[in-house]
Length: 613
Ligand code: AGP
Image (cartoon, rainbow, N blue to C red; front, side):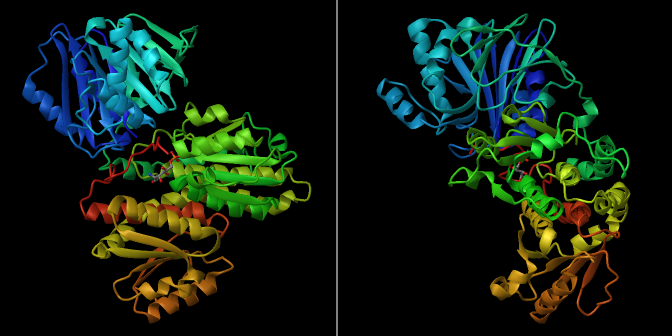
């Protein structure tokens, strides 16, 4: 949700900013812009749409021979005001001397804007961000110090903001500010960097300072001073991060999405071997004492958004099935608007790939305030959500670049499956022998995912056959309702197809009215499920209404007259089927979108980290 970068040093500022923004493009692509500060003044370059458009604008201006030593940049996911050049960051003060970029939302911008307009400030955009520029400018004119002006202005702001700010009269520094939006400082030799996320610093520096909320940094070429908002100097550790360049390259794949789908067997294999040395041994998690985790707990609530929410729904089945604990699942955005009965006997599990999803962070914060124990599953153990957690379960899926989550989902499911087994092992009334078959089967899962990936030609053909339809139904029952929801979400996100999922038994209570020969249905039919026969009956009902049917199954169903197409999945138990069936669904969505030549890694209107509520 918007990405920001800053650079101060002797190397090519424009190139460094553009390469940083390129690695942050997953955070938004409605517009892009950079500002360069040198002795001639501040120059702002902005373009609507993707970063490539900005690159062309900059190329046309031939700026490379200027002696610039500092700059800031931004890529935007529009909140206030449409995607346009006027609304693109960086935003400048009326005298052209102060410039800034912003990630976040200013909740009280309207009142501040009205006040600033009365005081004579002119606004040129519809953004909330422009208010911050004029506010700092007003304070600068009062105190003649950028640092003091920033501190005074931010005390008047409500909401979330990560900022990079430059002033022409103080061209030896960039000020970086963080409150409820991520920001890191990259420490170099005679140069320093600022970025919303680590990928922007890969190949530039491995030394990183994580800013916390309510901290600001005065970043000069040869120094970084971090202070609290009340001006106290803080002694922040410089951490070393080790991320290889190829973690954020496509490595020959056409899209990040298909690269990330292909990484799944390895991720699952590694996760299983990390936590389970053999099926006979208990499952272990570093830094999580499972006994302590479930001690005095009478309820578990799982909070997440989007794909992570689907993982939560699968976990609800798994935990209730194995552990006999009451589990509720809540979309984070809903959790925060209702009365919930969370207390000190609740274990609240937050799931977030990015760890920066604002809704999930707010919900988890609320659960913590009510006394719940907090466990966080995240792919980014350095992210904001982790600071509310007593326990953290890292997903270790590697950086996920494609906006459509794939490998992080499979990693979440694997981690949740291991967690439910580990919790069951600690239950007094569980016989470990009952868990053994699941643990044994889990070991085979990576190979089965590989088999699915090897058979992707059939899935591709099937996706291409149906790519002319504008609507799709996904049907499932039980533990796979969430799998169907996730499959439909994938198709929606990257193909813009109106794909909806239903509990198959619900079809006859309304959605069946939508069926005719223009409505293909993808039915999930894991053979060993309690509801296999019922699923088949629901498919018959759909067929009778002339719907086209695709079976995704591990059974040898010989029902040529019922199904138009079949996507075969290796043999798997119902309990583990969500971990396997999600992969052909990802491939189906991927090939569907690819056959339509769509922008798979950066679908319209979306961003990878949703840092606004
Ligand atoms: C998944 O394909 C989506 N892009 C989206 O639903 C995502 O899962 C959601 O925004 C939650 O993100 P998080 O896991 O980083 O919190």
